[in-house]
Length: 314
Image (cartoon, rainbow, N blue to C red; front, side, top):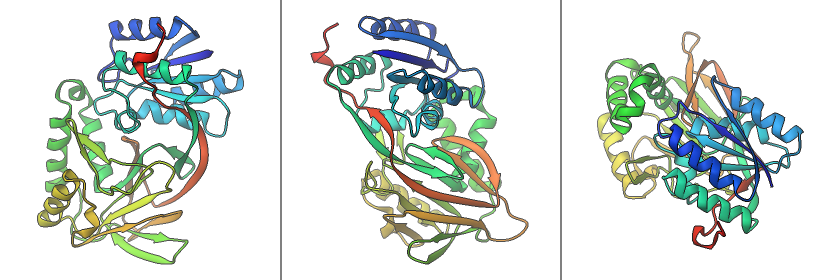
């Protein structure tokens, strides 16, 4: 097979040594080109070019943001998407059963290619940008923005940085005094005020160490989108939701939290003229806006699923 390996050397778990090992393993039985991203949007263009040239698959080696860009570049083409974990959390790679170690994951990826475990999956889409596992709106996105302002600490602190950023954003970085937006389900006519919404293409929402944080256990690939909206950010609400998510129970049982599933067409608009809505896509902060339109695209990209690494003939 002809593969393109897209490497984000700035990702938390990517280094020169494991990049060499991954490249060598992939090259044993495949023709592999390797490129390195150095700015936002770079991986999209690499993936689009690979699809135009008819390559069989593009391997995203970086964090969830790198994966998102490669998926966006490949959506609607026949070139398959493959993923290797190189970030701090690696939500999507772990969701599909990849080990969090990139070398172990490479063996599983090779097994998937050998076993032809390539299947189409649906993706979410927000304002034209695809997402693999979720889009976060409001408070969640403000936390991600805070993390990115301290990006130099991310490689060393990992999850503690997210916890600190969440506390700082809750305390003084986000207006909790009034609803920030309204979310409309255009398929059903339902409307909710919101301070924080996550629209999931699959679960879990994220990981705390090795523990999945699952806001909506029913959210899984090929089931459409699930929207979870918090209309309050009071500490009792957040605490109860966190306990439910850690235990793998739907947070929709918590007061002031609502789940819509399936959610095919959503429209989100600022609650007032002076409000801008922050949003993040697959863990990357993309800025703020007045409106967001979210839909589900069936069979958007062909995904290489991991196979049994023990069966790979290396």
